[in-house]
Image 1 (tube, one colour):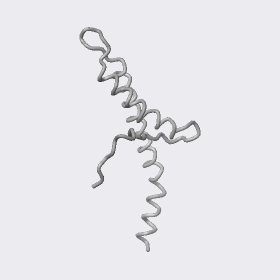
Image 2: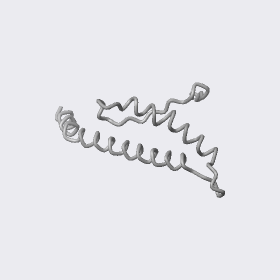
Image 3: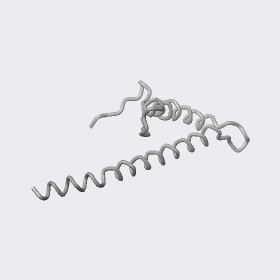
Image 4: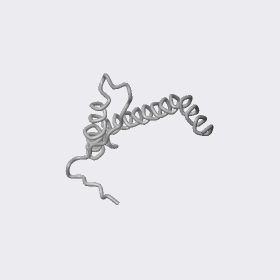
Length: 95
């Protein structure tokens, strides 16, 4: 019984730090994805012409990661959420 009490006390003391660490990690990843998206969206080739493939990929990131994540993270939800909503044509195999 003493072990269970000790575990419960440890969890009470460290739960907040775990949440804060996860929040910081999510924020870091979100910022990295946003910067990556911005760079892709503005990519030009060696001739100064917009790079079609990379810009299409940037639109995919915007449509299926950034926009859904903003909807889930809304102004009232303080936790940052990353969401991937693939196009209906994408089906991931289940193992």
